[in-house]
Structure formats: C-alpha cells, structure tokens
Length: 217
Image 1 (tube, rainbow, N blue to C red):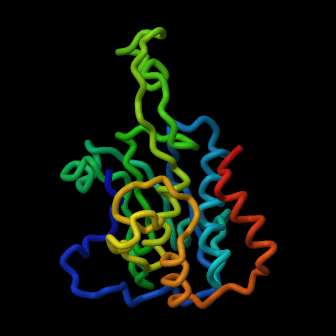
Image 2: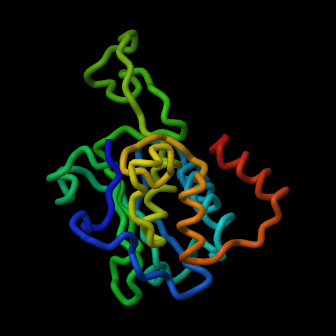
C-alpha cells in the first residue's frame, strides 16, 4: 500500500522548498474515522504523530479549538467513491498537500476510508470488519492500517517533506506503508533542515519516543 502526497511525482526537485513561516501551526478534524471507536483515541493518535515531529524540530503543532476555518492543517476522511485521487488510485492510504502560505488546501490531509484502520495495525476478525458478509465464527482475518504511522507520514508531507529514497525503507517518510511510528535519522535530518533542531533534552526525548512507539493505550 502507498502513501500519497501532492502530485509532484514528476518534479525534479529533491525537496519541497516552501515551509510554514510560523512557530505554531494548527490542525482541525473536519471528519473522523468510523473504524476507530471513540474520537478521543483518534485524537490521541494524531497528537502522538505530531509529537514525533515537534520533538525533533523547532515547531509546535496544536489543535485549533476556535475559528477552526483558520487551521493550517484540516483532516478529513473520504473514499474511492467520493474522492477523485482515491478513485484513480485506490491503493493510496492517504495524501497531504505541501506548505504553501495563502493556498487554502495547503497542509490538508485526506485519509482513504475505503481501507480498514486501527490503533495498532493488527489483523482483525473479518466479522468485526464486515459482519454482513462474515459469520462470527469465520476464521478469515482482515488487514488493518496503523492510523498513527500513516498520520506521522502525512504530517511530514504537510510540513514540507517528500518521500524518502529507497535507501531508507524503514523511514517514516518511505513511499510504502511500513508501520514505523518513530522517526529515523534521515527523517530527523530532513525536518531539521526546514525548521531547525529542537532543544529538547535527550532524557525527555528518550522517554517521549518510547511513548510514541507504544501508541494509544
């Protein structure tokens, strides 16, 4: 399965060259995922994904609680019926737009609700996912996708990063879904070129990285 980003597949640039010109960017959920029980859990997963980036660079990512139309990053869910990109490329899990101040869709993230999502990316009984077609005692298991990992990846695009190259298949920003929640050295180095290195102490960083890896509990 693929992660998506703004259509720059034919770009000759190694990296997007525009960043957010502010220390704090805000996000707002326009819709949520039906597969994950409780919006609070989805919100926690997003916060952990944001933490992965803000631990490494001099940037804050916060939820917009008022005047939500002003949020730089708007998160929504669609499917292969209603979204043109998902209709053409149903294997794309989600896509995001790069920073571009003044452009309304800049930073926005759209997830593909045609896929099955979870908090841990584990397989689930088919009856749980599709009770109309599978009996409760069916041995069939269905694959789910880790929302925290995918959010971390798409946030990287929303902050200005393109996909990592084939030399780093375990990077969060790798083209293919790999489920990794913690940034690799290549992810860290690239984001710090955009927003400078964060001053978080190594002790606190180590503790919080463990929390990110553990996910929503």
